[in-house]
Image (cartoon, rainbow, N blue to C red; front, side):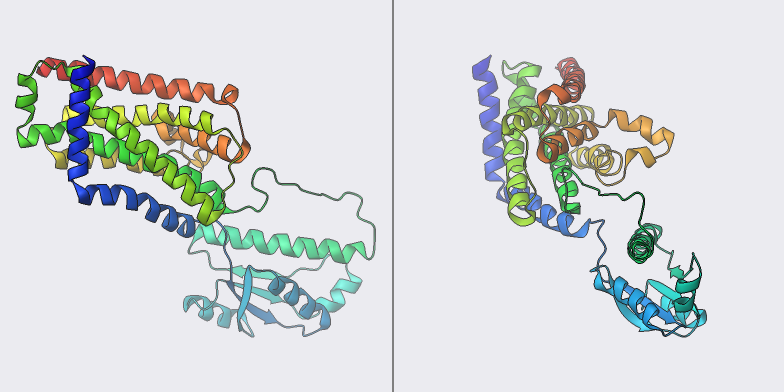
Amino acid sequence: MFTRILSITRKEVLHILRDTKSVFIIFMMPVLMVVLYGYAITFDIKDIKLGIVDRDHTPASSALIEKLTKSEHFKIRAKADNARQVEALMMQRRIIAALVIPKGYGKSLQTKPMTKVQVLIDGSNANTATIVSNYINFIIAGYSLQLNSKIIRVPISTEPRIWYNPDLKSANFIVPGLVAVLLMMICAMLTAITISREKETGTLEQILASPVRGFEIIIGKVIPYILLAFLVGGIVIIFAQIIFNVPFRGSVVALMLFSLVYIYASLAIGIFISSRVKTQQTALMFSLLGTLLPSILLSGFVFPIAAMPQVLRIISYIIPAKYYLTIIRGIVLKGIGMNFLYSQGIYLFLFGTLLLMISIKRFSTKL
């Protein structure tokens, strides 16, 4: 049995090595995706184009403007006299937000307990508008506490400490999750076309004519892609630390063990797809629709699952990437041990085993 599995594995390895273009893509694509996703997908917004409407022109209004522009988030791009000019500037995309300081602002600070300023934000992009609003509210609230502390002593003050990602870098959140997406994509897509390729090229009949059982064919074809996926995952993690300085606080051994289980589940999906379709093109299409898109959209990779509708939250329970994201972010960022993550590993193992058994049974039936 082991000799027959080894022969199938050797055949698959030779096929991978002879396809130099695919090998180049397999190793270059993760590097490019790490760089592109790491820099492109970010929740940090800098150099927000800010407009100013200062109707007060006092030292107090100048101090408020200076407080905003001292942060790295805001840059003054225009000054206006009224709301109509602000609207025109937003329509031209010259500014995203505008601070309107009313006349009498400086005097009101000295005589009234509460002074209001207006903030106008372009809401065409709801996510950006929310972030900009939070930035402005945070800065102005801090400045307000600073002004009040000169008059009265603040009874309660907060001193926040952020654990695991103290710099609030989006790359620390995105890049580990990218490992889950890449492993799923590579494992599922490559294995999805293995058996379908044999069917399409007509070489499956030659394999079936030999004394090789169905499960031996599947196991022999899966082994090379397990090693390949491990190599790709290692490359992604190394580049993440070199380029983005993503910390690694957990156990390498634990991550390797859980990654093996996740790769096993991902390969099972690819084998299941390839056992159901006849052409490589169909296998590739189903692998994209069934693995890549759910891994990005429904796993919590970018969008929080808690914010999704109830139907999508239920669907997310069958997405393997959801569980691996919990594992890799827990190990890499928090240093969590296996005793807290074993349930995710058990689910991935059971999920992969179920799909693999169905695939072997269907393949045996075809024999």
